[in-house]
Length: 457
Image 1 (cartoon, one colour):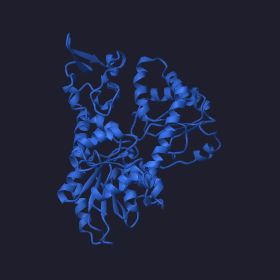
Image 2 (spheres, one colour):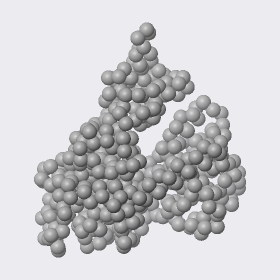
Image 3 (cartoon, helix red, strand yellow):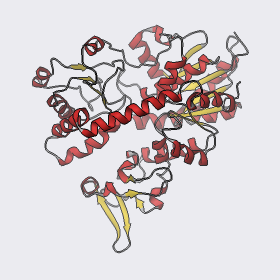
Image 4 (spheres, one colour):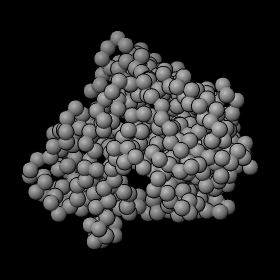
């Protein structure tokens, strides 16, 4: 054991989109000389073993894996866990077993003592544990800086006259000085233009509309768990000693300035994928975070395709939908006539398996559909869950949702708007690459975070 090594305990929220960036950060810290203990939930620990065998959690002598119970009852071994239940359970039940784990690590004669905790921005029991054992900590907010600032507005919306109503089946009520409170039913909410209401009072977020605020606030229940949970954890994260954002200074300059005025120890060190790629000289297969078995068979097929000709579709790791919406998207994709790679998780359809019509499978036989996780590759368009969130809201107003999908894909692939978006994306790609090079803002901030927040130099 090297007793001089700093020991970082890394605690992700147990969902793939949260695990990945924290794993990238953990590997970067490891490259800087940190001993790492990466703590998954027991549920995900078992998934890792099923996807890649016992080697998946073996780790390295100085990069170990450990596990915590998540407090939930047993469920389908490969299904996405219920997010609200998982949020509630981790908040209520995980502090005690995490403290026991820290005690075990600190009492081991074979490990360096824990010197810091790096936890997900919504795993706030990790910061409480750090305070209890007297070590520094830092939180990683895994979604965007603008989403964090949007989450912080939840508390202020009612104070601004945009309030939940518990007296009718509605999502919002707002105050009109001539009429009084106007209650908005769910149908109104989608179709009467309410979502276009300007939200012009948030510093750093100009030209925002109500629909641009994170969608957790769209609820008929003033006591809705996720609304209150996100409001609480984002505020707690803001009050923490240090926060890491997976962005870079030039991309979110104004937002980061606003956040720094609220919480001074802000570190923008992204994109973590690029930072990892640039500075991890050795890529150990034993340090991997995929909860699904990876299927890379599409790579040879992609190599045969022309540049900028393939649509990549991925809903992320937790989004679920009805079979109707899945089929509508499928036909929109097929009717666009563009080749595509589509990642379809086994549990993407709510309560049932994803079943595609025979006619659809015949239509796409020369394209590519994947029901397993595929490795990312170079494609021109990314249809992700955050893009689809707005699209699904429109399905209630149209008879043929597939038409909407087809139009949007064609616009992205061949329309003027799509060309403008691709040009802008390439510009930001170059700026992101500059941020993670020697002397770039993200690499500088990463080194500063280690020295200031984790107190190691």
